[in-house]
Length: 374
Image (cartoon, rainbow, N blue to C red; front, top):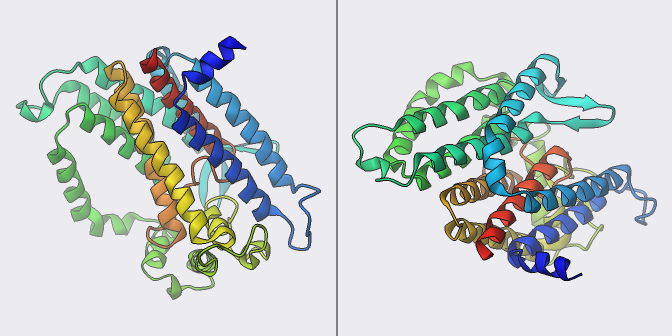
């Protein structure tokens, strides 16, 4: 009992508390979103709610594993985890399951496994280890040339990005680059490199348009004007915004939202779960969700700042950047501020691969903080 109390006392209470609250709220929302329209009681539980309960139990186990495993050991294992992720990415392009024009899943019975989620961990570990191995010397901006480790690190990220973009899955590919960029910047990479890269991307945009697939072009056009195709590509965003707006200040009540119960919004238990929250819990519920995420990520940055070594700082920074970027994109997608990318909301949306990876990343973040407190 003493050891348990000591273990719990070593954890960052804000990060752990926010993560557990988000997992619990996520299951409640998935239950509401998957309850059949004509069923007034929660029992019998919907199949997807049962599955999500199982995923949450597994998520708690990997969360504990992330806390328990020394992050220094994980950093040393980074190249192996990264290599395994690349192998799975290459394999899924050849024999993976295709859905909605994308080949990004392995199907084991009734379970869909997305290797693009698991490669996030390998990339973060590898880039953090590379940055830590470079040492804390003078800032890169003061050097006359870009150091070799930064070039190697960039190529290490570019390879999985290319494989994931080929599925195609531009959302996850972007997350890899954002999280790696956060590590590079903390390690001393000049902002000018990223500003120049952004300018180059913007300049190449008209030419890239010619190589986009039809559905990717449609997503961009529907983002700019969802009502150009209100019954097709713009339908989901329109219904999501309608659901969130109809919730008003305090919402219509748990499991009482007509948009949700009548299943007007597609994917409202996965990518668009915020539409359920907004309709049933209102602006108050959405504000509480934002506060929970904000506290988790701000405290995560504090952990990164107070880490005992450079490896911990870089790893915690990359984890916060990845999860925060994914959260921002999903929330913006639900209210029509960013194009629909298919990124689930961390710790909240239905799903196995995303939930497990988000949980183990939070566990590693707690691991970094826990070792600082020793």
